[in-house]
Length: 505
Image 1 (cartoon, rainbow, N blue to C red):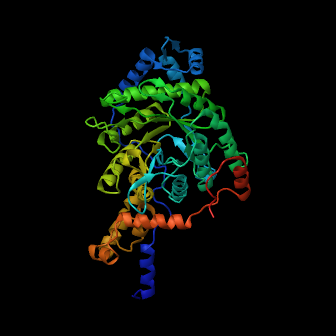
Image 2 (cartoon, rainbow, N blue to C red; image 1 turned 180 degrees about the horizontal axis):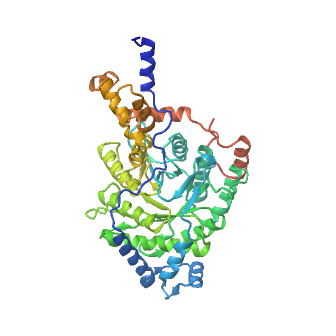
């Protein structure tokens, strides 16, 4: 028998050490395996939500919306508007069950709805974890640009919402326009932003058209984050006005309910789910009586406070189960679901950070949340954002996607004949063709987690995951400077708008 050559062994070792050519578990894996509620319990919660809307109704309804709701079949009771079950259920039927979230690069478009799970971002952190001092400082426009181009290079973050507030902007208009520009300049993924005032929507649509050569209306690649309902059970006039404007300009919306258990919502978990579901159904009803069938992510985000202190508890077990239950309820209704998770209360990138993020994000994904907000880069109970956290979370998402993918059982993957042959031939499976195929197809290989033995780890510098994440951030921010706006597009935008950050060199 001819013995293999040394060069042949080296080639095989190199092949075995190389990462897979394709992502074995890309974003969009199927969720829904975790069901904290039975179907009967889903119906109980849903019926209670409809009863809240039909008997108690919504308060502080702006006049324009009041008129539209009454015309559609709601009842005006003076200080409140009640929404009959038939009206709400008709709006559920009208609402799209799936729709595309377009990327400016259409290849980065994702389909929202069904059972597919996508991790993305959210939040409006007022602080950034400084990369040099390890302490928090006010977030800036430069931070927002850097966060945007950082996540653009992360495969497992499927869409991007501004993760921090540019605190160095001196007006609401400067904030909104410079946030919008940061999204256009630094990524072509689906993006989302907030409009502080309704008057800002139309001119920012002009900016989006300049960034896409007039294609925004055909493939709206920006989603609006709006909170038209203020807990408990009342509308917010400014956000309602923004909703009207977004619908008029064909902007998909994520209508977010973010009550806090024991504060702006009931402390009992079931009662809290019922009230927050009612509030988000009120938003859905509003959207569908204004513009039937308009794309809306049903973003019911149950949030929790520590009832002893009043502090936000985004990393709690209650947050994990509530957002998982919310995803289950929304999917039970057949609507595109948005929930919040990975909202660690940790300030440092430490064990608390890892525990809380992994627990809450995995629960939301297993429950089938279509869009999982806040899941990348957020720290300090949503008050902070971290560059290193973005990179660490991206790897965490890859592990979650792999868990969601599950185990494919077939004659090929069972491999009875191959198993028998390997046992009778060499007594092991190293180097087997079946093993090589599985390496490419079934296994994820982390880039930050360390799997070396202790001696090798020490010889290589005894680096922590944070050390490796920091180096990865350094590399991306040094090398990834995309030019997603042409020189002509950028010049036209700068001629029309007060853009306060230089173009990427």
